[in-house]
Length: 335
Image (cartoon, rainbow, N blue to C red; front, side, top):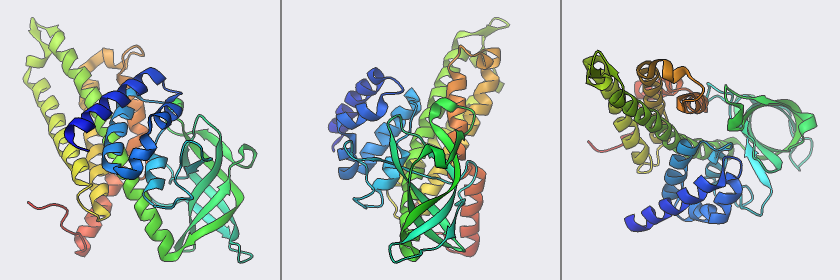
């Protein structure tokens, strides 16, 4: 897509998303043709929709769709008319897989038993199956399991039940679909795609928080002066703005490299931008920021979930640091 086509797509999708309401996003986005664009131009599809998710905060997530599409497995990629498959991601706050294979294949069919533990984004429509990355000793396996509420324990994850993110646990029967190097490659592709989508969404959330705060300090006065004229306020906003610039550049640059570290860096910096916005904007909004009527808490609660999904900024920064220390860090961008 050229620039004009992207602008038109963004404007049209924004109108559809705004009119759909938080519960009707999946059907509205599917009818609009977003999944087809995801297959043809993933960067445009992901960057635009993830940005809109951060602005409108729907009661669902398209991280699953993005992650599954990155595998190029046609049996997993979700289309509007296909059964809904959701991925079990690691529990909030970690990138380490928490599900464990408790019973290996009994036959050549790959039947197994898996102790599922993680978080999943529940779809407003019926979910037919779960895709579960699970540890088989020290190795990784990818397992599919039928989704039945009675076999699993489900409870809201994080502090925003409306987000759809749900903790899932239980031991169920499944089928191994990939092991060894194949499973590791598939999970790496899914993880990288999810990081890119989460980076754009966190950046959008941070921008909304920052914009609301700038408007607040520009319209409120103290001691006869606008709040935004005080040096301490300027410094706090400038600090957050610097992290915003770093995060947005890293998110765009993550598409320019096929190394796994590029999307990890994008998610790390987006999480850092969000944290800076959460801390500084909460302080500068003062009592207004604590009220249920102000929109700040909605973005804060959603961001607190997404920043922890597939690893916090601190954990991912440590992972990147270990790569640098080992000498395996590739060149992510020319300087």
